[in-house]
Length: 470
Image (tube, rainbow, N blue to C red; front, top):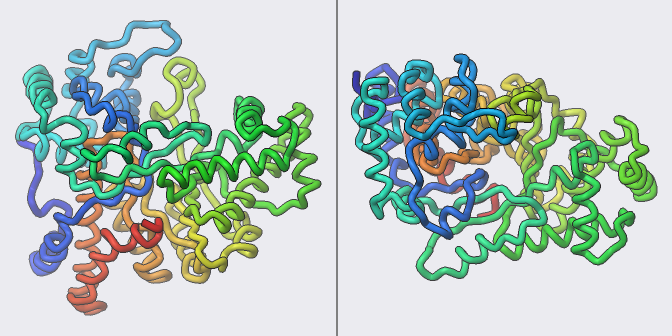
């Protein structure tokens, strides 16, 4: 069986609507990629060494792929994920790849299956669907390609037409890789760090006290000083801005915000450090620090993105054996209107403050996020994320938010990926789906073609540049 990389894939089935969608898609197909939020390791571009093999490239780091194989009864070790506990053998790369190919049918209809088909067909020239019989041959085909200069990370960066690529980084990172890339005259792309302070703001997270101590040591202030703690966070944000950062990212369980007097916040800080705070204290302090992060963004200009609503590390045995980000993070219901009110009352209309709200709870788009973005100048609707960055979910998202907030209140597409080679496939998917949605509005007489052409251009390049201050 052949891979289904139809040139009209994801475009409407109705011929007349498809013609309009095809023209809209062609108008933006070759535009540069702007990726203002993701998780690619910048050292791959510094070192520019070949990717190791198909398993390292497609399986080991992609929890979208490995989680379905785990659901089919395989250990993550069976598909090449390292066993941190050292309690069992890990499949060799070729064996892991063969197991994946033998179960290719599991990905039919999934977003992962769509992206993988696009990558295999468009980047490696694979025309047949993976299976047990061709697994070794496909492994060798990919291995041979990866040794060519055209498949080095920097060459791919250029081939993919990536204009901006943002990474996600610990606040205490020295950002050496970013500095090297920025100073390298042979590298013309923009690779920007993103300030991700969750583990420094939420005292319920393991290691919080040690991280607070590292901030204090860097800032030269006493460990128990709440004022010094705030100054150190602000200082690290300045360090990121000096290295090109345009945003801070907050992966909170829920978007709870709370404004406290400094004396009250300092008392909670002291209790958290001493280990005497209860669960309510910890939650109140974390909510206050999300509020404080907004205040800092108003002051220093970093765009604030909030990625809430994920129950991290749902399966403790998998966490112990394979670590985090291995496929067992799960979405939960998320509320925004009441939890964000303290923040928005203070900063929702502050000049220059941009707040991008993401969700993995589809019900929140029309119920809360789009109405918030339709009133507050600071609020923008984050693109469908994680479990929702899939074709049908993206179209549902467009329907859910457009009638309330229009097109201008979105973030532009966000690929949010660790899988470097999937970046063009994900952005291409978004462009096809936007063309399809706009074509329907044209055919229904709700907008004209000229308006649709302006909107799709804005969605692809102008909107992410504007929202993320690029």
